Image (cartoon, rainbow, N blue to C red; front, side):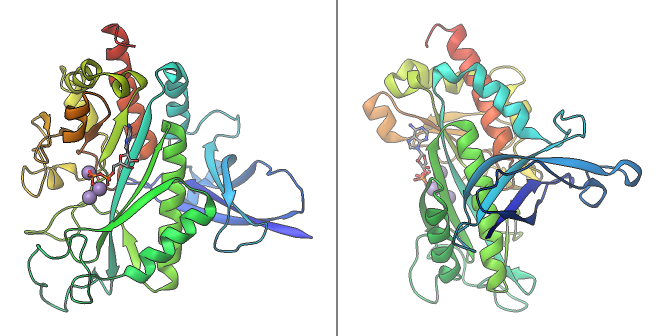
Length: 339
Ligand code: ADP
Ligand code: MN
Ligand code: MN
Ligand code: MN
């Protein structure tokens, strides 16, 4: 007997990478082998030396095919087994290992938008729906578009064993969110990439495209972000570490270094309107949804907990945002003697 392994990887498309996948049929009980692909078809290699390597790094049950079939998240390597330049996971694992003793956790809120026939689901042909106001966490056929796909996606993520922790309808029609975490940096990012793959895959069956475009509708409509909630052991135990992390993110060149890697098109989303802070002006505050970084009110009451970096775009690479937050904040906490 055999089973099917769906090998999933991140390609080299600029400015925003895409997911790719292909199927390998394996004998029952077989180990997942290293595999290869044509990098010249994924913006990862030239035609004359096109072979690249897929290295399985995270496996879970395939909830679409069921049975013994699996989904296999892969890193892309060169044929000498060094990480390919598009391989952001390899960079993260190094940093995550260095700061493992601080036990960083992440919860990522993935916003996205359904599109059908070239416009957001729920937008009428050649016009606009009623202005924002009733859609966020709404109910009813006049407020909510695509719930059948969203429910199916949630079930698939749960069957796959992903750490999905909730879903909600968002501020613009056809716009939704799911949350992954809390979990460590590598785990949350692996799970989020597979959850994205499942989202595209299940929407395909409904003839609908899901997009992580950070500003899918121009004008007075909210963009789509990936708020990244973050804590370390010290932050979960005391308020000094919470403030130190917020301050560290505002030091010197840090705001620009982060924002530049928080997803293509970030200037169009972080305008200072629609619950965002301007991309070029760092701020943090308690309960402040107009700040770059929010300290939730409960965290201020408890004097411990986590912070929310509200800047990452929906199209951010979770391997990158988790690496930057661990690097910046854990380095600062260590320097301040707060670990
Ligand atoms: P919001 O109120 O901003 O919409 P959500 O409820 O959508 O927040 O998401 C909050 C996320 O933060 C969840 O994924 C949750 O698991 C995560 N989270 C909760 N506590 C922590 C923590 N201590 N460290 C990191 N992430 C956390
Ligand atoms: Mn949320
Ligand atoms: Mn949201
Ligand atoms: Mn949020």
